[in-house]
Length: 182
Image: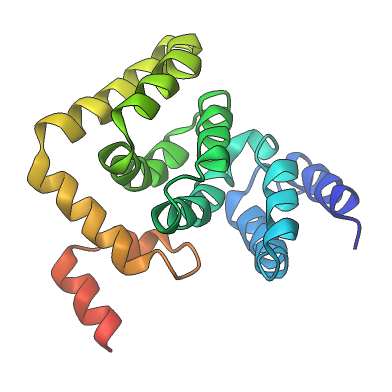
């Protein structure tokens, strides 16, 4: 399978026949994601080829996997920061903002202050004012709402090893625990 050709075909469908229907796009990209996820190098190639396409619609799904990897290997933050940059430069639509929040809160909570400062200087400060406002609200949220931040972290910890499922991630902790026990 030629990944670039496959993504170009999906891009043509997404901006053409599918009329930017994200559900169809996510369904197709998930198929490629799962296949690429079998090998770390293949997944990284998939990430690099996909992050800057489709107006950023698939960035939250990529970020989920790399955030899980970052939590297990905190010294390897390269792809997490690349995805934050791609997200800041994307179409930055509300749907993606909502999906990224429960992922970025644990990131900002667990990342070293020095690295957060680098992200601010290299990515956030250079972004569009609406993007800057979004990121600074999240960073302030993490600093001022310790208990809520802990809950975001706990929920992601429970789900980090599953394929990205934003419906599960949006559940309250008690319901999430019940669902995972079932």
